[in-house]
Length: 124
Image (cartoon, rainbow, N blue to C red; front, side, top):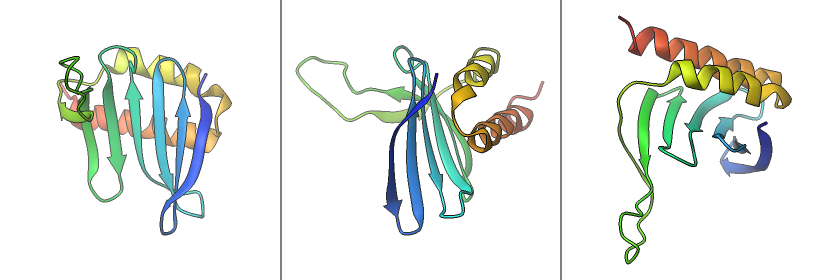
């Protein structure tokens, strides 16, 4: 189950929240009215981590997270790299179950955006 680990004012008029469980990291950016202005849903975080992101200015993105740990002698920062299709059939039911204990407004918003992403980016 997703639980909130941290909440802080990230930028002027923006609150960043971090939720986590064994499979997901969810970061949301919200204004003081509670409106979500962006999110990053990181999934399969202990394996082949990928991220579905959205913000109101840039729209959607989907990437694999390269953890930068290719060599034990060099520790690099994680970066986003291009990735293939979003694993809807795997992620959606897990998110529904994992988000049961977080704010329903946040959960429903993320679910709507997941469905919107799939409709727009994975036709055919």
